[in-house]
Length: 194
View 1 (cartoon, rainbow, N blue to C red):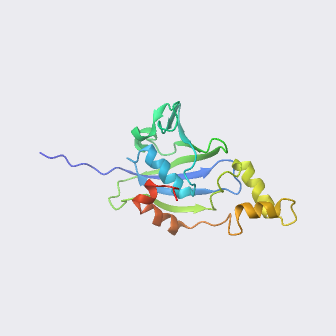
View 2: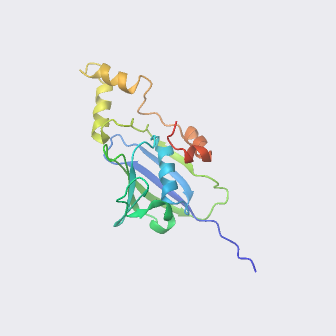
């Protein structure tokens, strides 16, 4: 007698950058059997990072990371799935990216829904604002950068505009573009790699 395998429950997560005003956030849905390494790659895509720095997850008392990148890794992120490390609605944990800049993301389990067989890849439902540029000095450096580029009279205005580019729009968010990337397994696998 064959056992049928039930599809995993669907997790709805809200990801918010800590200490950034105005807030930068995303709301996504993904299968609960997504492992933490896959979640890292998904977060790189939905937030707009380039996957060029180390990262880790702090969930309860445990730290999860890529053991190939960090010899001090407590737990191998590829061996733990979302539904096991965050089994309840309302749980929140930290995803930290780029230890130098210290980008902390609060990842909150908003809802755990019935399995959705149509959910064949992660989906971004909503969000606000563009991801900060890499290597801009973390949350406080980013807010200083925004103050500078919004004040043409600032001493560093031209220098910052040259560095960030005239096309940068801190209010830009394109859910359709993110979902196109999420629908491409290669885009997730190679998150941030040009």
